Image 1: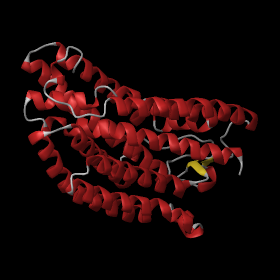
Image 2: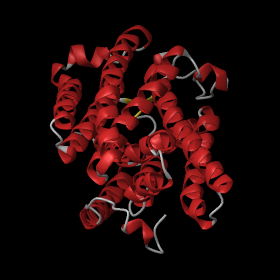
Image 3: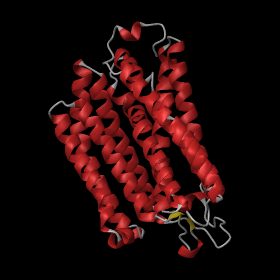
Length: 342
């Protein structure tokens, strides 16, 4: 296997890790104003993600850095053609972090309402635009033979792009509800369990619709006809959906969260498996697409980076595993009275 192909799998793995970790935080941010009926509920929700939300973004930073280091041409073209949605995502994530830190600094209701609204809008915008960006990558953007983007921002807001945005929002909402089923108790837990069972049907319908639109607007299925083994990715998605539903129904919260992570991983891997060996397909002519071979760094650089990544990624996994285990208990009303609580 060529080193360039290895880096494609690493690149995909890092994005999947980001979607699985920060995805439930974005989902909770979208749900937050609606399921937090009281100030206590809202503080419990915020403190359920308080110790870990910023660590999750390590995967986003790493995915961006790897794109720059391993596929510099893709990095350059991506941040010019998708400049507006990517900058909006960045600003949304910055605003969300500011909201978490500033909300509890002043005890005025109007102050908190403003930050609560910002948490919702920033989380929704980031989740939606991530879906729009990746759906357009799967579909193919308007790249010419000089790797110049010949479209506008509104060209990205096409039916398939919007469907991808909606799908990401639904995936992250279900993921967030599964996390809250782990971290909450009492009536807040009951509300989360009931809503998770309802959203499941909407999510399932959204996945079916997106798969149908994928058939119409993209050529992702070509790889699956040529390599049937890739069908493991949609199969993982289906298994995760079924496991999530029954786990929530039978109050197996940890298993439900793991299952929703599996759905996200399967959905993302489905798209990545369909575009390989392309990284940034062209919607004008497939010969203009950026692939793992015509956009990668020199093999020597890739081998050096592989050694470095092999050292530090396991450390990040160990750290995150420790953090999740350390803060694995439910968030009680007593805990939110601590000075350092959100």
